[in-house]
Length: 239
Ligand code: URA
View 1 (cartoon, protein in one colour):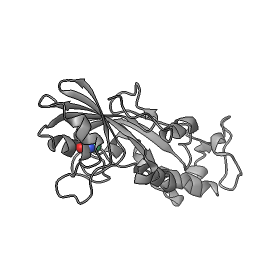
View 2: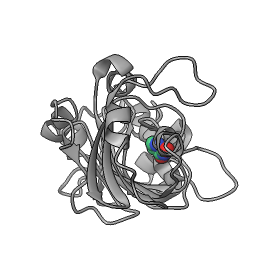
View 3: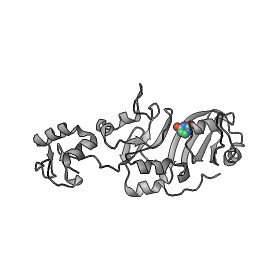
View 4: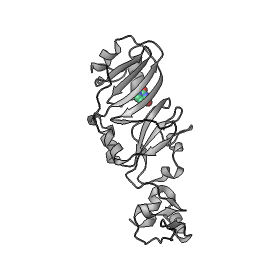
């Protein structure tokens, strides 16, 4: 791919802007030698104003989504894209969230510009477990594990029951739930179906990939072995 197009697709500007950046000598190799638009150079050898180029297409990021931000491109309030560098919104192909978390849910949120990978992760057939830590308004009754594992729980206004989900009781009002679907407000509605209410919800893992020590509101790119972990099968949470 020609350099102007490659750099424009990473969101640094339109092709005219990038052509100007070349003319201004802002695009160089690692030694500061000015590059020209028709040079043949590896992605890793390109600097803009001395900084390495953003990662190429095929990007996968994980974010520790904070509370109070929405998984949408446009919203009146704060959105998850506001936590990324502004040019990431202008990348082509576009960077999308892999599924969504509610505004009031925190934790592991993936982004990718790889449509095929996105569909492999969110497809119900992929059977990728998502693990949530829920804090509840009322004590667990003790019936939840069996109900969630049954494969018969029907949420209000739905026509097919939920697939079996596994619940680990952490304390009287705290539980870890592993689900393989991504229905609308699923975890909150599952506990609502038991007469309870989720006060706080945090996603700690997607497949075999755990959030780990990433601070709230921060993000980082995943390497190939971390992307592979998403597809590693995990045990249902202990019951
Ligand atoms: N289930 C919910 O209820 N909310 C989320 O954000 C994710 C799963």
